[in-house]
Length: 396
Image 1 (cartoon, rainbow, N blue to C red):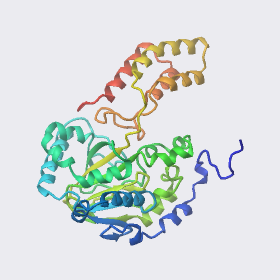
Image 2 (image 1 turned 45 degrees about the horizontal axis):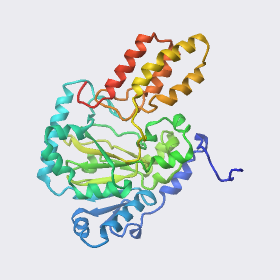
Image 3 (image 1 turned 135 degrees about the vertical axis):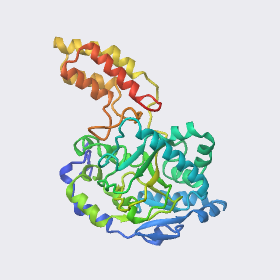
Image 4 (image 1 turned 90 degrees about the vertical axis):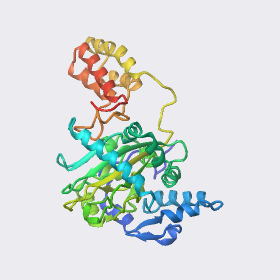
């Protein structure tokens, strides 16, 4: 069988052209692209939450609105904003109070490590706020996540059965802007690592998650609400390109920024180039609930005890490597068959990314241990420590 001349099995970083991205982001978002929106603001369809709730009672309207949002997220600007997504300010304030208590509790503990963060203290991040809010107040959790617009956005992009995660982020006065980036999954890889994945995986990555943010305080532009580059999710090589200086410069020149009021929400395609903005205020602690929602299908068919297999196979691989019965490449192939090759999901309180954007995987740990000739006792100890760091639970 001869491959089509247009077929690209892999993307190559050398093919990244900033002009190709510029041509995409030069597109205008037209009112007919989002007919249910209240208005188009800086290229972003903005929907009135109260109007959407009223519309949902009309026959067929729910499905047609989901189809509209789906198209906006994939083929349009890649982002929607919902004004008044959370209509009850008292509920938000009560949840915010718990979020702030979590921040203070965690400030007293181990140092927080944040994705794309600046100097220590510029951001306060609470990992796994979903569990932590539920533990503190199941009643508030139920009231908060009963929100129909939140569920509608998630189901529009991911279908039913999605899995919610939540991180609280508070950018304090003086907090600097992030570098522009794409998000989980491939967004946590360096370009050279992302390039190892076939082109179809790059296309798939953006439909495995939905990113969202709920504003828990008013966020004027000077407080640095998230910067977005509408239509950038359509650039096929974006996971290889976003770290390059010329792409960062394009983002700096073309990004848009929406002020948000308390209770507003945004949802966007994880492949959309975005970055938290610089908080230039003296007194606004920009508090948001960051939602990362995953497709139900991002899971293996069977549950397996990969840590137990690692303990059983570590001495075998170590012995065979030492005896010359296997080389490093053969050991790596065996490791790929049984060990977990991804640093997520994990308990980010215990296992935050430190030198890269993802924690070390079980596969990477074993390859490193064999390459460095660790004693067997150390291998077993580090496997157990890694497994403990990934277990659910609060604190270190």
